[in-house]
Length: 124
Image (cartoon, rainbow, N blue to C red; front, side, top):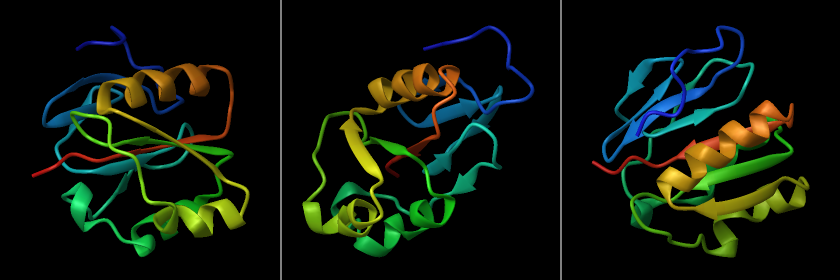
């Protein structure tokens, strides 16, 4: 699905996505990523929902977003509270959505100048 015809150039915008990729500013990413509006895209070394560990979310603590939009893949799967306990302790909110909804929500929150991060799971 194509979301925008042009990349903003200054903010990381999700410009399209599909079952096995997401494009940030027209640059295709084929693995799981963490993206924020004003920082470089971070490769996220997770390949399946079932293999997620609390440590997989530590990179989000370092970048300190206000809210994390977690894209759980093709279908909605909720995170066990233990996985995101450290984020909660830092008062970082986490919203779980299917992949497409997470991409769209990230773009909306980013356009509102919110300090949002999208943690997008692309399963191998």
